Amino acid sequence: MNAGPLGEVSVGGLLSVNGRAQSNRYDASGPAGKYFSADVTDGLVTVAKTHGLLQFYLEAGAYNFYGIGQPASSTGTTISNTFGPLPIAYVQITPDKNFNIQIGKLAAITGITPLTDLITSSYNIQFGLDGWQQQTISRGIQMNYSRGPFSASVAWTDGYYSKRFNWVVGQLTYAPSAVSTIIVQGGGNAGHTDYSGPLDNSDFYLLGYNYSGSALNLFAYLQYQRLTNGAQLGNPGGDGNQYGASIDANYAFTPNYSISARLDYMAYSDAAPVATPAFYNDAGTVLQGNEMGYGPGSRAVGLTLTPIYQVKHWFIEGELSYVHAYHIAPGEAFGQNGNQPNQFVAMINTGFFL
Image (cartoon, rainbow, N blue to C red):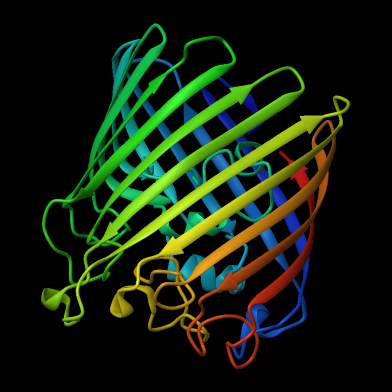
């Protein structure tokens, strides 16, 4: 995010709005139930101190999350159902340039969809099929260490924002060259959390590769999650698994114009209690606590294309996405009856970096 210095403190932000069109709308209120909708994407201000022993980062305002193959919510509903008007707020103790400790509301380790950096950290307006399984913000404490091409992070958090501090997560990265990075993430719930269901009672693993060239940027990953959904949560049908894979590439034709393309895949095990969320196809859908499949044993493939144009602080981006789900359960896919296997979405998003 672009930011200007103000003494030792930097201030930045982002203001953007979007328009959205979709096929096979849901039987739901808000933008999920409309063929056409518009909303504020982001209206965020950041304040940060990035030097000295004691540092901090604050991010406040409005935001929304859009994911291919998932019902959209209004920005107001998203804020209320997720992280509130202050999504990120932490202090950082930095005794050494290679080591720091962060405490507060943090961008979660287990995933690749953080709210921090906003549009600059993603090649697309919508994140991929597997993004709904990943954590976005967690409360807790995190330690980070780097030395040469290696870096490591470990955290004790409340996982999917559950207020139950029983998740242990970690990340290792290795940069064999200036343009390549290998990423390994892993973590899980050390106990059981009745508050958030199978997602918060899970083990999560991700293996990723990032390439950052002068014109081509690419990120690819494999993801696995063991979902605990047994009798202790009132679901005697047992546990299940979620598998995912994604490759997302961006190519810059000029300093102002680039285009991104992404291919996603997701799959659920056949355990019926795991892959059938209680609030999937109605207005009650929220980010945390509900696995976002299309029924037990369901599979889905997604394609996304995103041209982006930016001049100084102003940007505009369009997006076309297509999702095909199969082995779907009745009522758990697209359309007003939840029985349609396909959905097309077109979006446009424009705004300014402050």
